[in-house]
Amino acid sequence: MLTDLFSPSVQHSLDIAGIFVFAISGALLAVRKNFDVFGMAVLAEVTALGGGLFRDLMIGDVPPTAFTDLGYFLTPLVATLIVFFLHPEVERITKAVNVFDAAGLGLFCVTGTTKAHDYGLGLTASATLGLATAVGGGVLRDVLAHEVPSLLRWDRDLYAVPAMVGATLAALLIRFDELNATTSALAATVAFVLRLLAMRFGWRAPRAWNRRSTAAEETA
Image (cartoon, rainbow, N blue to C red; front, side, top):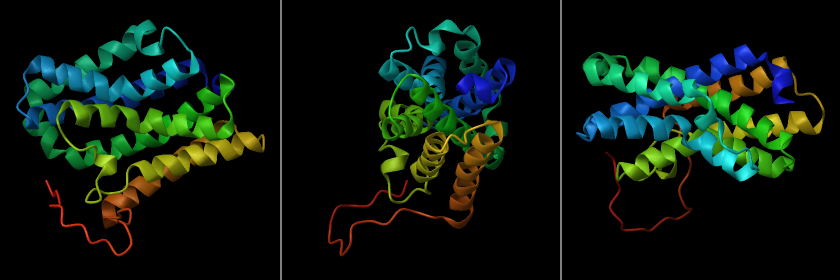
């Protein structure tokens, strides 16, 4: 079904674009953490490929695409080099990078859901892996950088929720046999727009009702 949505060349180009912007965010975090160039490359690779690698291992698509397509592996290294030499300039366009990151989030939550379903998973499991495809790399990035994963922090704009919405929409479209290039693009766009709105208006998920925790709150 995934190959029916877009031509292989278009799908590959979209994947590479999403991988590139995810890798940029990983490399930038490495710079902020004062990592060396190897650490930058590791965080770029993990951020860009971690979610898809996890999905492929879970559905039995081995060896994973990250290891069979050289472009997938080399793209984060290109992003690393760009950030290595031009990180002050890249930092200045962080808002633009975040917009492209939101687009990658929308794309991967839909394609991840679709691919998981192609491999025989049910709709709920497929949507879950769609979510993991979109946000898994960011979780691994934060763990390696000794950060609380952004999607678990109340003080960060909604990230997982838009991906969850996009993955759920994709699963519903599959359920009603309405998934095609147009409707999948629409589902990805919904996730993309939700993420943009969350960034624009500072939307956050609610914390526990009548919360009385005395734990110190992270705001970094």
